[in-house]
Image (cartoon, rainbow, N blue to C red):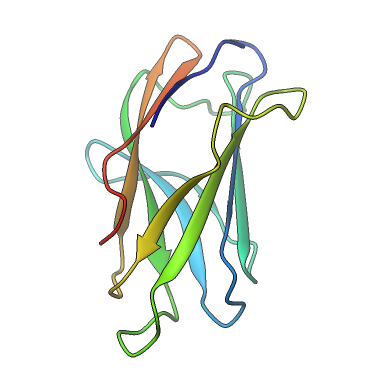
Length: 130
């Protein structure tokens, strides 16, 4: 995928879901130094993050990774298909939904890249599975 937002002021809503409620993932955004920039810890089988230039501490211009942190998936489990959806300020989607298949457990499972430039967001899918 390659998504570039068009709404500079409104930001970008990232929603993530997966079918198995016993598997727990957290959605996190890390900067190029590995520092966590944003996270969602909803619990259950959904996570969401809103990034916006209007945030109290907006993401600086730069390159980030969008990752799943695994808390309960194990290698004896069947693969889990995680669905990513990206929404604009009116709830419209930027294409998709897009999927990532988790095959093996991992603390930081990189799924997407995020480029931030003056309030515009470009997302590219770097992997479709691990």
